Image (tube, rainbow, N blue to C red; front, side):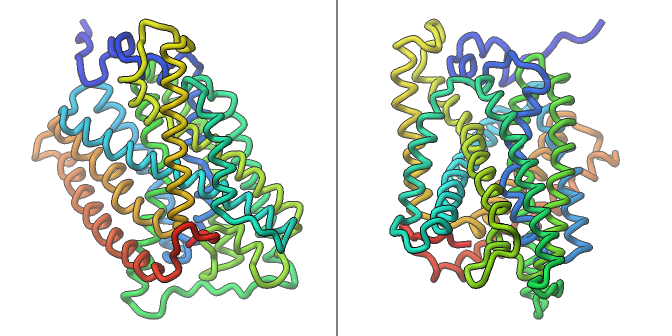
Length: 435
């Protein structure tokens, strides 16, 4: 006879007593809905930084690291999902993971509002070159829209928005790839130089900064994927949803990385759209194509901000909502409106006040995503399933823990170093995003 399921930190009964879990994490959709959610979580405008990551690694190491993260991400997600799903993780580890994920997801929410505001600014500057509106004003506009959208009560209620998000990610990827090919074949094509930094130390720092950026890009989906694993019934939805998600990943990640780095080489910007629309000189691709790509990015950023806010909403409604009353009851509706408005306002204020992106993305990848994606899963696996110390599995896990701990430490140092070097460009409420 099969063993009875074991209780753990995520018992199904929690959904009957925890209003946050019962309302926000409501799971009644199909596997393709899970695919929409997962794709929105992972495939976002951060893929436009892939050529920038390649410039610190070169062609060979760039492909190697991109593929390694792709394969490793699938493995790590499954290990984390199975470990927590089995309910065998220790209590302190569970809360440690939740703390890191909450902090990271808030950072992603801030970044989504910041980049959406930048997209509005790009469109505005092209339509009104001498306009007086500043970046923080566009961020305020995006924040108001996000406040309105934040009132969708459950993850499931975002399914149609996330389907549109998936289509938008494919749309702007194809537009950007086409624009890069057009730029590379045009008479105004920039010189293609793929050499790395001159000094050995600079090459090392650039490489680890790029590795950290890749960690941040791939790590984006860790929390929604774990949540999908935990929402019963999970296994079928998760596997099919991940298959859809990683099909989109292969199409978008590789095409964006290769086309952008092929055209701009070691001059690739942290947002490849900026390379295609340089401050000095004409655009390197048709304006209508780039404008449409910016619109697609802007719209998808709203969906991404919604997905990553769900963690905070679940935590808030765990204490503020009453599961015995309806999700739209006055008792639950008023606190939801107030708390979600305050949360989104906080994210918008931080985005306006601290408009760093590229450097912060690398720091978050090194400090947050590398431990969460590549150290913690192996540690949890060894703690949960206790493979014999004489087995290959145990020592492979130990090797990965040591290797990626070292990578995270060096990546943190190199990322923070670049942040410090760029600090002279930084001003509170700046009208320009500091890369």
